[in-house]
Image (tube, rainbow, N blue to C red; front, side, top):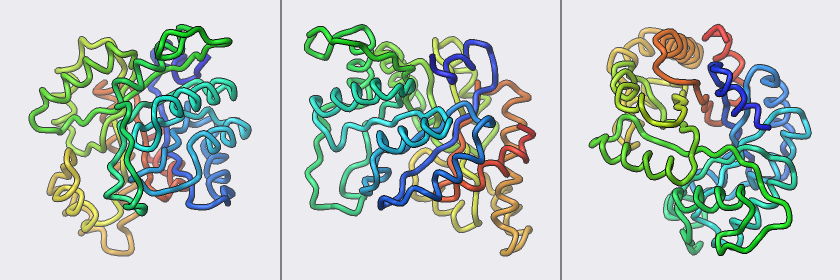
Amino acid sequence: MSKLREAFEKGEFAITAEMAPPKGTDLSHLAECAKLVIGRVHAANVTDNQSAVMRTSSLATCKMLKDLGLEPVIQMTGRDRNRIAIESEMLSAGFFGIDNLLALTGDHVCVGDHKQAKPVFDLDAVSILSTATMMNNGTDSTGLELKGKTDFFLGACVTPEYDPIEVQLLKMEKKIKAGAKFFQTQAVYDIEHMRKFRELTKDMDCKVMAGIVPLKSPGMAKFMTANVPGIFVPDDQIERLKAAGKGNYVAEGIKMAGEFIKQLKEENLCDGVHIMAIGAEENVPLILDAAGL
């Protein structure tokens, strides 16, 4: 049984961390980062060719993490595969004992490093969830019986600061109907937005994990606010980074992330957190320390 699912069922504050596979076959650094969080997080999400950049597969990396003793969450996007390939990969993940799956539509290839690639998008996040639910029940998407079914704990993504928020709430309802049991949010920084989002989603039959991306510089904060839909970094946080001084940006960002997680937990504004260190997975233990977790 999924440790992540078990944590939610016990009412624990669930913690996951993102692990991004490298562009190459050397996974040694990722393995070392994984060892640092074993016993401190319930699971680790493995990205699926994140931002449409070709990397080692989520499936292979999940298998490595599981062998190390860290429960993985396989990410499955619809961008690169048709439904045959997606279902085949789901069966492979089930065979390896991977218990968690996060369904994503995926970034378009135009933002990645293989712009000449042909996008597929045969299935989107909702239809990936529906397919996984059918496979959990013992059939493929055409209704044909499987010889050995999967047992995925299914998740999806949501953006609490999207405007209008009603669009995201509608998508959440569709994903829940398709089988999603938990949601990991886009990076959030504004506590007031999370208070409102908690109120709007309190009656939904799902768990919500707040996305935590530690700020590395004032420039990063300004860039994300200006260019990444659904991300807003309050001015006071940017000013706090500036006041810390250039040599202290990363340490201050880690401290701020820890303080934010503490507040989210104390106010019961989410059921857990998903920490995305974005290329600095070695900092995840420091963020957990700062949060007192």
